[in-house]
Image 1 (cartoon, rainbow, N blue to C red):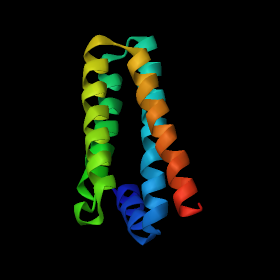
Image 2 (cartoon, helix red, strand yellow; image 1 turned 60 degrees about the horizontal axis):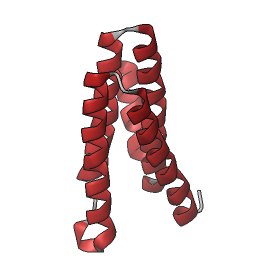
Image 3 (cartoon, rainbow, N blue to C red; image 1 turned 120 degrees about the vertical axis):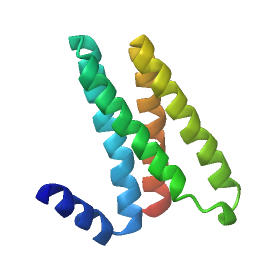
Image 4 (cartoon, rainbow, N blue to C red; image 1 turned 90 degrees about the horizontal axis):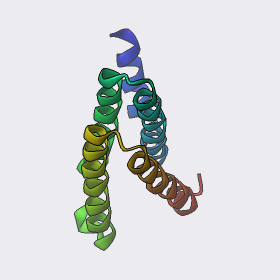
Length: 118
């Protein structure tokens, strides 16, 4: 519990642009664990990491500023599609779909870094 509180405090104190980058990077990390779990036949771990990835996309959706313009609506739809893809990929053990979500997330990382200068 102590490490979780530390991680939460660390996340709260970080620059919000860095926090978004960390969330995207977390998706990539968890999805690599999903792929390993599928290959190992570890169903429990697969769904733990899929759920963690979905939770990150949900959090990213929660912080969108819809008053800021069309980008928020685009990202909301993109995040929802990634969530749906992950759910289906988990049920079907579809590594190609996991790879696709990782590719989209890496594109988001690259775009975020370009936009924020990180």
